[in-house]
Length: 398
Image (cartoon, rainbow, N blue to C red; front, side, top):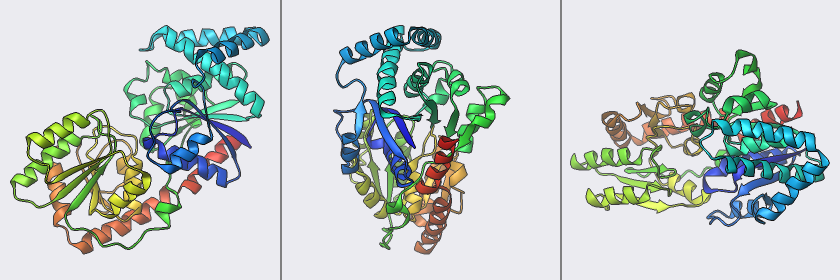
């Protein structure tokens, strides 16, 4: 079987779960063609991502001329299909928050991808995220391309379902993947009950590095790590408020913020203004191996998110026997059971977050180890990349 993956930007620091999924499919004997709209010149910190870049074709890399040529070629070779596809894209643009010229570019991208897939004898096209990559995949199929599907992660898709035409995409796709039961329930909201059976749950998975190669390093007593993009969704500013309160109470701790993002400046300013530099360290973007090292050198992961899908870093921490402090948001409670694998608190509740962090810091090493072992067993059962890829392969084959 030869399939193609379409992503808006690949590889990317925050898209390691896509890389793991592709590589797991390849271990099952599937030939996977990687296609990305952009990202050929973005900085990468992980050698695995650098290898993936070498295998990826980029739609916009050569500029506008190849896209114009692809459009003209399809107008001449299949004019009726091209006009029908244009009509569909005009319909998608009607309620979009993006201007019409952007949607016409989507059509041109689809024409280029259609030609690539035809030459490569691709039998199925799968897109990650329900935004523009899914839209382009839908247009490729409308032009006469292979069957198609897409994975919805959230929360972006759930924030603006009508602007991105999510219901239209679900109705037209051969199947749709949600990464959690919560995500599936949100997709149920936007389509008639008759379309529900095509929405399936396939979890993001971890590879052997996390599931089968965990050193028995000692737990450092007072260090917590927060891994993720520094942005409004992840709640780092609320976390800093929480640790400032703990500092005022005389609690000893160290906090590592691993990641980068659009709110780095605001977070750094908060740290400076509240004299937290001796207790809080920001790493910037780091490699997957470095994330693993930071987790192993910590007592636990803290992620006080306001909005999520189901963060892969929670799976990684649990696989490394580290308990998790997070929130009752989206798919997180499906994986983390509060009191067994860590602590879950209401999102945005500063008092509850302070209490959970203090409980983690004050817990005995035995209690932390017990939680960590239970967390590892749970994530191994539900988030093995090879097992989840087998589910996905079954959907592709059908």
